[in-house]
Length: 569
Image 1: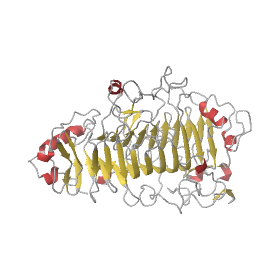
Image 2: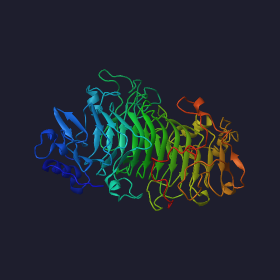
Image 3: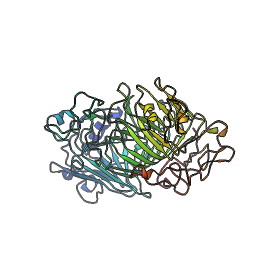
Image 4: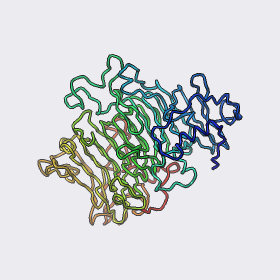
């Protein structure tokens, strides 16, 4: 792809400022917003905006038209068009399909005005659903980011509508990927996608005795001069999320692939491939893949956004991570660890140093997950990660959960693995207590791993996770429950091949038609032993197979990436 752009002298200078001369600058200088490309007579407007045949995105601000620069089929957007210090606050902007061209950004793509706690406290209205800027991205569009610190940020009240198709997905990626130099070891080449919503987070006080603050006044209630008082600071550059609208819509992501994202600002302040901060259930997240990210693939901080048909491949940290009172649902998820990685799922109610009992309480319901671990330990493997060992789901820090119709296994020889399902009482007893009390549930799951289960924490007592999965009753710390049809395959029962069509040693993810142990005995009948999750919540559909996908319903085929290469962990 040709990537030479005809820049004006002024926009070239702005580009150099935004790139920092090769240095990473988390607080770049404010761009000159006075540039009026529509009347810049130093170049042809058909190339530099304002009319003619220019297909690049444009918007009007203070009576001035700003438009991207078109050259050789691509569109380039300098910091004078948009940046971390120069967000687009016009009512609407659209990035259209430019055939084989790409939309390339010198800096971040920040959408909407961020109203922080100070501004909100002084009476500046916190934008609600649809009151901010609307970002439209057409099917087939590729958005490219040049700097590691660049990312897409959607503020509260603003919305993103990125609706691709199976034959024309929308791609968010880094410059090196388009150049053809990026490999699976190139995680964190740019930031990723961050959406900030007005949903609830337990970092805000709910006005109860178990809330995270003091007194009986809830941060979710309207104040004398604003719609609520819930204003939390997001990771990355300062941005604000939180509110009282768990049903709010922040837009649509459909058939979207996010590649090489997850730049880590500092340890503990990372940009994930897709970050959903207090995003509401009115938002659609469907057919979305994260690929080769340094930090998490999908991370939800509070809110109640639901996700379906999601894919995470070669994610350096957790593929699905959530906390802060997240109450969403997920159906049909495929996670494949191809080398170094951390957990398929990491579910927390709070975080280190905060009470695990804070409300509102995290409670994910997930059905039809396929989690394929790699048995690669921290700082090992071809594509290393410092985030931890490759593991299956971990529920801790007071999180509640329900898991149904799912497979957790390993693509390593003999299904060698680290722990494939773990419950951890970390700073309090809440996580395992929820399992004892029947709040957390698990039915119709198959775990086939060398180290299948683990229960940990000083307060776990005699809780027996294997017995809990089988319906409990072995002791007082594992009372009887309603869990059924869970199968654990370990030791000599591990089959010669996996539960996946092409077996161990591959990147395959499709559930086998017949699930047997090492002796060929069927140990889970997909015709009779699935749980009908449509009766648990109307969001779900009744499944017809175990796990995330099958050969007969291979919804990943044609639009996802990274699943056909040989496995070289």
